Image (cartoon, rainbow, N blue to C red):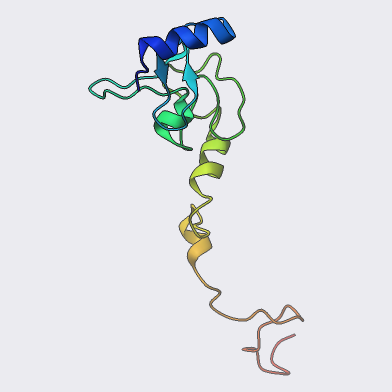
Length: 124
């Protein structure tokens, strides 16, 4: 939001900084070098968090562990598959990746290790 010229000069006299805009969300004074805008939107914000909300993501930092993404592809969001799977699985119930983990046990295993199908006394 733009502020009046008179108010800008008052701030210049008081603080030594000429400011012409205020953040549309939180009301912080915005210097011309630190403005965050969006194409097609008339608003001005003081930070990505004010503009995009809590889900804002700084480029070049892993969303999972906040490690630097140096050496990764241009639009990489995670440093590894481990971080990606950890973040993507936090809001879902346990969902195993292999089909064998989804199958229940078919028969109980006896503690003796032998099945109960053999007849007593038959055999060597």
